[in-house]
Image 1 (cartoon, helix red, strand yellow):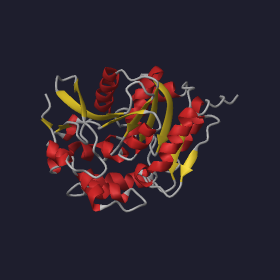
Image 2: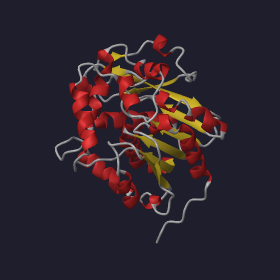
Image 3: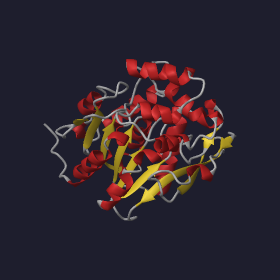
Length: 307
């Protein structure tokens, strides 16, 4: 059984632009440990679902401006905190965290909620995990918007990722808010930076955030290479609409859209774009434009699959 930490609720009181009702669902790990997953669930319960998945080392606070904008457009917005992040439970040992465990935890969460006809917006580890959910449950997803992420299969990494990996493993204290601010083109306010630090009262809560960079399967020896190859095999048959929206100022994922455009049938003929003046956390830099993009993508008639 894992030792599990839970961030005190008072750490989340009064956060800037984040006055949403918390929702929780408990999943059980294969070893029997119960893990409470937090998620936002806003909008009419029968409205079309937009699933917003965050990555490292952020949490659903990243989508605080998406939620009201998309609810106002008539959608149900669901935004989970990955295990180890946000208001979700945080296993205490780095070895508790693996790519496959994360996929299993979020698979159980997704199926327990019974979500279907989903539009997925995913970024960073929200893509590494979210696209595995698509591969596991393709019938639940109606369309995908893929931003600043990848689904690596052990064939190397970018210089930007290598620099991030080295920093993440060697910095004495893991400065979460500072990291998010460094991945945006605009300067976050002190209150916003504090909100990204809020889930982590001290370094003991950051084992998942520390471990995530080491789990990206960038070499053939990494775990999850075979599982990601199997996921690609499903995505290469996915004909529902797929749109990429990568930022122009992200050294970690630059050029990463090409694999999705080239390999997923549903990406053919779509109006893929590079989001201008945006960094790795493009949700912070261009929330209004991305919400408009999601809405337009959902409302358009699916593009004809190119012959």
